[in-house]
Structures are given as C-alpha cells and as structure tokens.
Image (tube, rainbow, N blue to C red; front, top):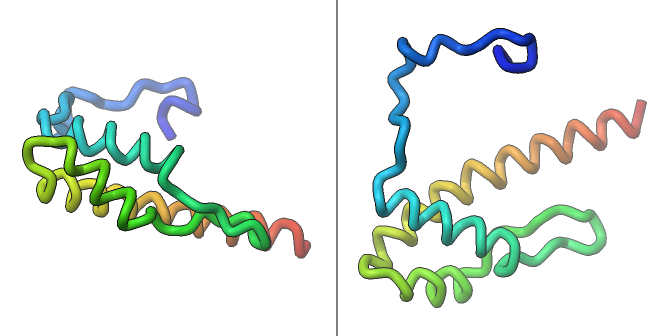
Length: 97
C-alpha cells in the first residue's frame, strides 16, 4: 500500500466518505463486539466460524433499527470471513512449502 512505501495516498481524489453514517457506525460497533464475544472458533482448525445468529439478533435488538443494523453487520461479516479464510489458506500454503 501507499503507506507501506512511505508515500501518502492521494486522498483528495478518493471518492470514499471520510465519516460513517450513524447507522454504519453502530453496525461497526456491533460487529466488533460480536466478533470478539459472539463468535466460536473451530478448535480443531483454528478457523473462526460465522457469527452466532442468536447473538446477532439479541445484540441488534438494542438499537432503534435492529433490522438495518443486522444487515449491515452481516455485510461486514461476509467481508471479514472471506478475508480471514484467504489468510488461513495462505498460511496453510506457507506451512506446506
């Protein structure tokens, strides 16, 4: 990445928003808490399993729009699990070599 090479990214040309919306911030907060406390790790393979749906429903019920937070958390979860699985597969490939 640009930061790794000592260069600053061209932030002025980036189209990404600089701030989260209130619901996105709440979803990020919920996902981080559930990632730490609402997830089971497969003890045999050491791979994190998907979030518990029961924990997800109960946690999202705390917010004024539980359904809106739930689908945002699930979108974050989909991306995070895919990235972790890729990292796990890359680690397994390194160990085989």
